[in-house]
Length: 222
Image 1 (cartoon, rainbow, N blue to C red):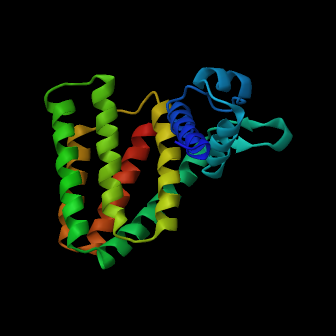
Image 2: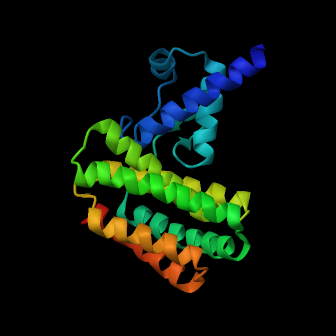
């Protein structure tokens, strides 16, 4: 492997690890990122570390304060409401475009993603497997299902912004002490979304998606 490819691979590894740690609250709201401690924690050099930090700043998971370095964004009710409302608008826009443009391959990817999600929901909620790994698997299956729904939009920029907002939304969810995953409600939202999208029922699908996001937001700030 060339030196360039090694650096890129290391940068991606650090980016993913830091992103996960920020979302999971390892680095609290408002905390300054200390390069030396991060460098030691992940055992990397400064070059890929700075690249990863810059990427995180682009998606607002970090704030670049110039000479003062990087810090984790502060959290607030107003910020969360802004994230939620913007997420609803962009995801509904993407879903509308996906229903208009999506083909049979897109439909099959939705069905496959829904199957994996429903199986993981059963594992957690019916079989009682609430281990950290099982919950992580559920989060991943949930994310993959929503990405499959919107992928038919064929808009890379729109999907980029949606993914960034989802990361911000998830950061609040992980911080929340009141969030309780409502199995029956969430499972029903996912089933309805899958069916409405396959039926190409654009207006109803957008309504259900908006309700799904609002329901999750209310559970976070309850």
